Length: 306
Image (tube, helix red, strand yellow):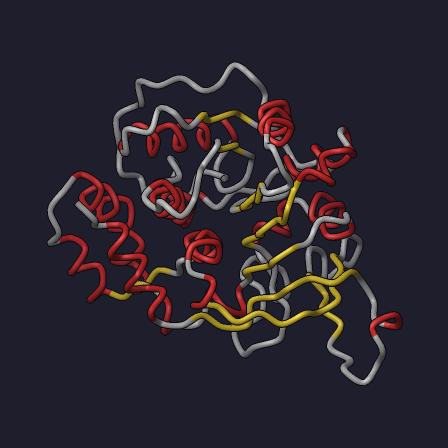
């Protein structure tokens, strides 16, 4: 996670879902610096009284590029400039890569899923430095990319690139070319207005009782006021593992552009359906093409559960 508003909402969903066994959280440079992302991860763990879940600091910069930020959207603190108190919990003493590797090694079978809600820097470094890790992961669910397979599948950072992939395209390329199965939840699905929070949804949320509802209302306030809606990018990636029936996927071969003057960070899906698989460019990726609007109601119920 890279410390943004939707990262926080995704963590709440994950930690409030008994269908998932959350081992740990790793922070990465992205929406905010990795130090702030780590603090925000600890805030969620503390809010939900889940000190059993470790939070580890990851890499502070993309593999080869200078970091970019999204503080204009997420606020200087990553959480809508909500001025929350600092958490009392401390991050894991282990770096993120070591913490992930130990968790994978301790799993009795190949059953661990990595859900990525930020740039893929940590995971690319893990797969590069510890190649055996590839065989320990069941699948990687990525919130990232725009695949131009729906009317919503164009970029948000550039005309063709989504923020997480654009932030570290070389890392994304490494992950996409690894042998681990990938499910990609990109802008093709998340930018559909039918699955975004509206002012009406926000009003309903604000009127719920409880610390979590108050927290969510606080971090969403400025964005709802400014834009009138909020896309649930990261919560959708988490929900794929909780309610898979809400989502439709299609198999595409895809690759990440790392050199283009105008297309840097683009996730290029090969849509030439007349070609056999062995002639398509890139590796197979399961791309999310739609989400049932029931997802939003499910998310709000989990968010406000007593």
